Amino acid sequence: MSKTSWLIVTTSSDHSAGLFLSHTAANRAIELVNYRDMPKIDRLYDIVYLRDPFTDVWDMTTLRSVDDFAERHPNAYYVDKAKTSDDLLIEDKWRQYLQLGAYMPHTQLLSEVKELPVQPIIKKRISARARDVYFDPDDVQGDRANYITQPLIAIIEEYRVYALGGEVLPQMVRRSSKTPTSKIKAVEAVPLSALVGDFCKNILKNLPGYDLLGFDVAITPEGPILIEVNRSPQFARFMEMTRCDIAGQLIDSIEQGIDFMH
Image (cartoon, rainbow, N blue to C red; front, side):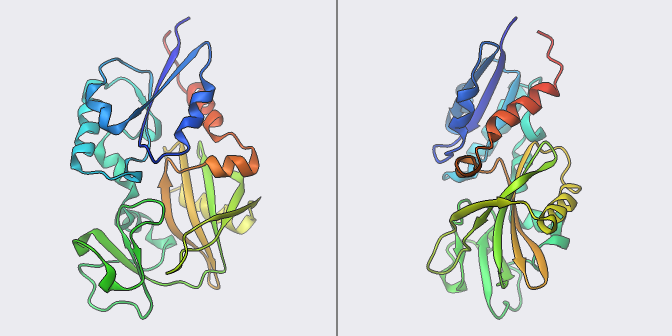
């Protein structure tokens, strides 16, 4: 029997991608490559996982290489059904607001806002690891069309919640919130609450077809609020805290759902 071949395309800042390699087996080959090397790939694969390309410095050349690769590899199964550059742009916070605005704080493009919120938070539309977040508009660098602004919300608790194969996992990570002087940090793993679980399940109804998602959820005096959705989220720290093998579960769920003609 031939091996099921996986190609995982990622960046040097992706600290979770290497966890997939431990699931190489007699009937499975897993290869990890960087986005910058996509133009050189000519062999065919059964399954292709385009992880988040925005964790490193990126440009339109990176996104064009994704479209070129898909044209050369049209018959692979693409994790999250993400096989074009446009598919990867689910990470755009403005796009997320247009689709999921019922769950998010009121959001405006910084370039179009007429009056800033009294206490604004400003975020780059595509960024990673809480980079490019500002509390003073004078600190913003570059084209303001690349940024959104929201009112600063009163956060009681903040959580990262994972959904795998369309199901919300039973544990979540409590996190410290981003402030002008501190970064976001994972604090502890806790059981998924009914409040947060139901909230994320409702969001999932609007996001069919994704194999792995991470929801950043804030608990506020008014209830849960979606901060953002992360496609191909980082999960190494979550695995350390919970011993939940997201990489292995993702591999199994995808392979079990595909009828390979080997």
